[in-house]
Image (tube, rainbow, N blue to C red; front, side, top):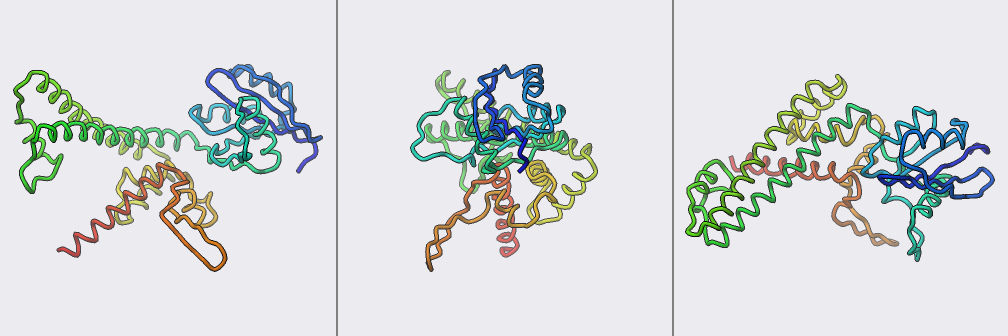
Length: 307
């Protein structure tokens, strides 16, 4: 560790950020709050500089990576840290922006923080798109549940053997009519939401295909390679690439699986070894698509055995 390095902790919200500095002498002090504006950040770096002696960090969150890129342009090394992995002192029940910034600076200097991967522009754009499609699929599921429960309350069920939400099932749903105007309006609104959700998902999936075609060559090659695996289609492959980034940043497969959260939990002591379900402590979007791929692989195996 260099003796002249200053470690800067930033607790960021939408309007301002609390700033704390861990000095080379060991002192950790708060510098108060500054507006979350480019000019304010530039003045802060000038005040604490030179930039080569600064190490800054802040927690990953809804503000994205704009602050990271601004500090990088100013020559400051910055890490975006995983908020769930920031050490928490037992019994500490006081949480303020100032205290959080001081804790970040102190833990950063001690090396107790875990930095997250910061995507480049191409990966971030694809990630935004696949996450929009993921949100659309969740909304589609909610819309189907609302309509399905509405019909169930009326005692309306499709014929035996008809799979839900297929084209045949939707044709049957559209033939339904209700005695009361209020129920008819409710039914039509729920049906419209289901149809809109289908169109929305299809539109986003077409956009993902277009984004893959215009992606950098390395990303296209990796997406194509992943689709050679059973159960992985273009959307799943694009999601994996967007969430994982370059696979070369993992030195071992175990690190990649830990990042995905698809490793078994463990509660062992002495000679007793007990393993449970997957931890789900990694990237939620990545393990969700991993579980979906596994389900498709299992269903495909069952279909082949039945044939």
